[in-house]
Image (cartoon, rainbow, N blue to C red):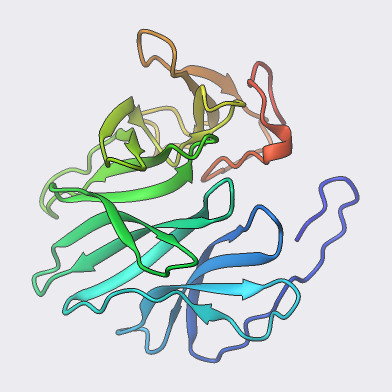
Length: 250
């Protein structure tokens, strides 16, 4: 953990499993007692991504989040805590024998440990960048169309909101580049950091793009970032710093 004021770094826990292949998306519970993370353990060719919970006090024994068994090659990634800390949401993917993948959003109440599918995408679409809304009524996620290998990749993905109770899908912004998140108190603004649309493969400086969800059109406002910032893959705003972005944040 890195303290932004003092610059001090503190080790929260160490994962010394020799079979650990990857670790992604660490999220701390709102009360600060538990960390959730996604990790792949095992042989590189067969390691499946799973979600683990680890206590801040006793970080020696990670607990595997139970999920239903699948006949397909599957994985669970991007755990994110609900604002009240009672639920985890995560992305589930399943890959069939011809490498077609299907993605869904699932939630689990930690007291019951029974995951519930709230959204499944019928199209060949990858999901990433999962975030709860501040009021816990919906989940923000980015959709990326999966193109055949012989076709050009699609530039411009879609940010959507998924109702946590009904699974209803609402498009919030077209032509986003990378992961979006909420950047204003109350969930009225979403944003991302990325290269200008269409310039993902160039050396152009990244920009902060924000969308006002109350506006009639989903046109992004952009702010150029520091010239010394050569690359930024995603935007994360701490709860204590949620406020409208009106100036260069760096």
